[in-house]
Image (cartoon, rainbow, N blue to C red; front, side, top):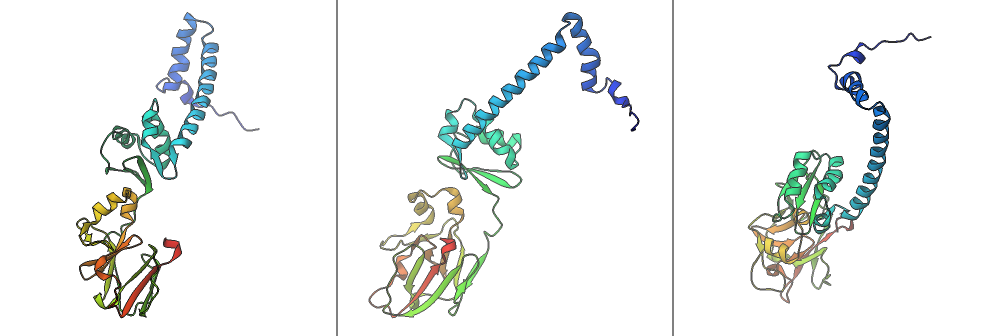
Amino acid sequence: GIPAIFDGSNNDDRFLRNAIRLRVIPLLEQLNPSVKEAIHRTSQHLTEAEKVYTSAINEQTASLFQGEEINIDALKRNPSPSSLLYEILTPLGFNSSVIGDIAESLNATPGKQFLGDRFRVIKDREAFLVTALPETETTSIYTIEEDTPSLTKPLSMEIRSLEMPVAIEKNKSTLTVDRDLLHFPLLLRRWQAGDWFIPFGMKGRKKLSDFFTDRKMNLRDKEEVWVLLSGEDLVWIVGERPDNRFRVTEKTKRVLQISICPENV
């Protein structure tokens, strides 16, 4: 048979587990001979209490954490917001220090970001947004030449030049503009602070940041916005709204039509 192996560390009371077993428990038994029994009962009670806690946490988490959002009002109504945040965010790689900072920001103004290993939490108006850390594409610029038929990056798009008359599609995923007003190559990039346009159907200019606020777009959705430029002029907030300066009129002879493919809509 397999010979018995003696682990010398079992009798070394420098280890906390051994100090408790070899010194503390014998002292407690002198005061209460049934102390081992009491410890065992307490251990069982704690195990049951843990089950109750886990069940309650799972129920609360399911109602609070919908999709990628943690509802702030619901979190505030909970007796222990910090505990709930800890249970939700620890499995996503956030440490206790960052989770503490998130809990302290419950009443703070929107905009702050908290970074974990793989995810981040963005404080928005009504929710904490939990998203994967973004890829570093914020500085990427893509070009559309006069003869470019389509794009696959950063979005899938079909691009056509057409002679008038053309039926203008009224949907956010298709842009139809006067081709002769454009200066090629067109540029496609992420929106930037300070960008402005003249919204279709209007005369005055509007900052994109104000447009997003009017649309009640959250911080995560704002980060996903692309803009199409002709020179330094904004032609289209992609998938949202075109600029009035490039609209089709009765004088238009040729149009450029750009359609976002369904997987990007």
